[in-house]
Image (cartoon, rainbow, N blue to C red; front, side, top):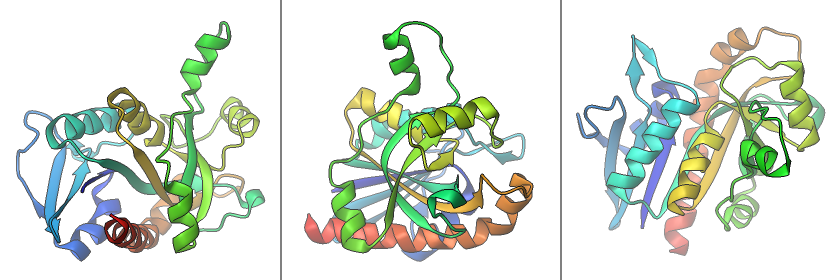
Length: 235
């Protein structure tokens, strides 16, 4: 089995990279900035692909995630893509800082395209999720929730309206972009997210995100390890 993790930030991926001892393949995606790490586990391939950096900072957001996912699928041909990373969530829905979720749905919340139902449906996305996601979440004991994706860290009132109308519970900046590319290649996708901030609290989002990033990244490493062990035992 070939499993490929798509991760936006080095800080999100580093505890996972350290734990599994994956080694970097420098320049694998040149001239793209994406970074690739790989290792073998009992004859199975594990890849970790990062968006990479530009102008001295990690590339976050939908464009970079789409590029990384397309490059990974075309060159690595994974059996499963897992978008792993941090997210915001809502206290009113029972979320707490450090909670880990497996997504039961994924869509965009900031693509406001006027027109008929076809335009609206296409803009929101609502892409298919790995059909074993619920099985895995139940077996391991993770929460489940719908991921909604936008290109900004903050959230405007119109974004919140779309999130609430579509029963979104987790807010990130990459998930739906990764899922969009996977849908084109018919590659199964699963999303694993750890909560760094609560969108319905008054604190400054970026400061809370920075404060909780290391803790949430270690929680993601734990979750990734459990999911890998489950998948490889079942396969």
